[in-house]
Image (cartoon, rainbow, N blue to C red):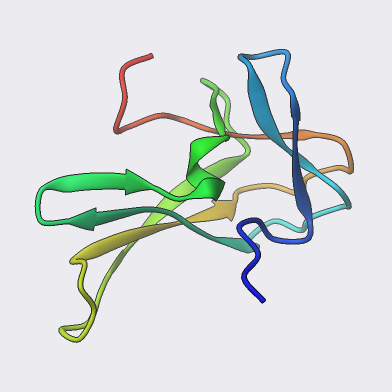
Length: 101
């Protein structure tokens, strides 16, 4: 069964902007939460995970670029990885690099 978000996160109202991603449980530093963006030709497409994460100048996550193998229809993908331990109910944040803030 397809799940657009990992079980450890949910979408809730954010104090930063609109909706955001929040930890449903403690998440350890270095946890790979899944794909946030893919690049098809020259277009960058957000996944559901990437669509709800808010910007912070002091983020607790980062995008890690992965190069797809030759059999995949896209050339690059980015996964969301925690850069510190995340507490339950804490918002997950990222420093935007694809969009202007």
